[in-house]
Length: 422
Image (cartoon, rainbow, N blue to C red):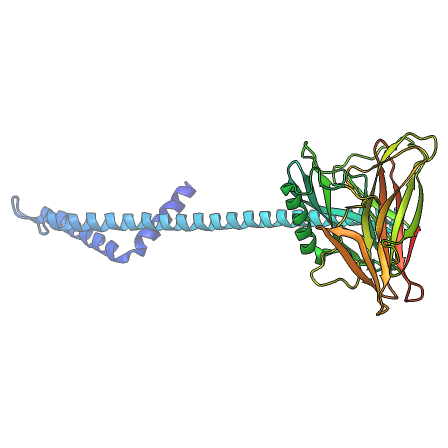
């Protein structure tokens, strides 16, 4: 009953708040009362003091409009309350979402700190890295189907030692392209050689620096030519970076692990010697490497390949190409160097390395130690220069390959010394 009376009171207040329409209803009601009371004092059949059509519309319209306005006020208040409730609920949900985001960020920060701590702990427990770390980043292929493959090997070298290291590069365990598979007029071979020269010249500025300082990372590119693989698989090679004392090998991504090679025949016996290219020629000296097949061994087919040079010469003639590797060293007797030379048991065969000579101007010159794009390269040696040319001896049916170097320098600044190492 109390709630009903409270509702009736609120309803009355809403009606009274619209005073103008309430006044109209009250006037209509008063006129109706006057008309009803006055009829008691009138003679029968007389007209009422206030006609019905006057006071009843005033009362009905005034009261009806007042009730409608009262309900309109109640609805507006209800809508306002609903909007405030919705706004409060939305704000609460936003706060809940914000709190969840803060908790997630805090959890991620804690996870990152934990990972950093675990990484630092693992690094503290692990022995510190030393030496040179070599990583192959990218291999760019230029195929010539049925002929060969030019591969641009992009790599980086990181020095983990506290001192500077010299850098030398070479390669092994790969099927190198040893020269034309047919005649020297083969157009596909010509296209391959020309492309090799163009790519080598284009990547000249990306060469590996001569040294790497402590804590430094340097990058380099090795452009090399391989035999064509009918299966179209990348060559399985080993890139060697050396500081002159130690070697740091790296294999391409996905390469199979090297299996220990079975012991092969005894190593070849090597000797370097000189000769004169022409009779009565006191200016030029020819240099050769002799390879002897030890007695008691079967005959073996042998190839000598130049696989690197470090550093490159300071002085080269204008428009002369850079030395390209691998370079198949020609036999002393001439002929195609690709198939190799068969050496019988106990016999020796020789390969031509190049010519050296000091001219009348006392300049030291080196000729033919590398042939690129058909050009016999010539260089000038400064008194303080020293070159190391790296070679490999490949033999059919033998897994292991011999390696040796030829060092070209001068001790007195007038005479060229060419000596074998390894």
